[in-house]
Length: 219
Image (cartoon, rainbow, N blue to C red; front, side, top):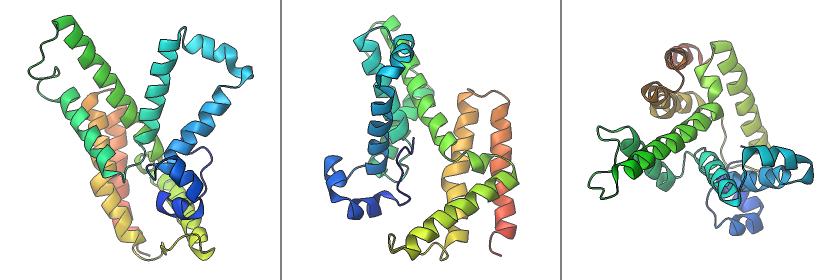
């Protein structure tokens, strides 16, 4: 995730490198590029033993790569189409009926399908949480990495690599991010139960940081 990140968002990356943008059809450019960079490294001869431990067949390797791609693509939170697909999968995986309604497959197959769907969507949400993990930790951790992100974006703006001045709307933007992404994500982590009691800690930190930012973030 974020391998080879250039310090600018996808829309600016497309302007700076139209060849790369065309290669990925102007969709999740940085995310797709990071997968390719990381996969090329992972495929090097020096990691042959690691690959042999992870999968014992071509089918398992293909499945592993699919999970990697799905996970990294989940970090492109501004792609509305991808976001909508993830919401649909979450509803199917953790809705009132974990099996697809109206399915005509055998019960064993339906159970396997439901289990695999849950696993895939949980992985997607774990990497999303990892991507913004500073927001669900202590205030000092959050403020440290939030400040570094601001400097990265401000540097890109000063260099003429970005049209967006982060000094305008940063305070309001962080509040929006907590309300519309971080806190709902923390609720989902708690709902799926994958982290046990730690999920309460992530949610509590996210809400506490939101309150703290509302009081201190403007000054």
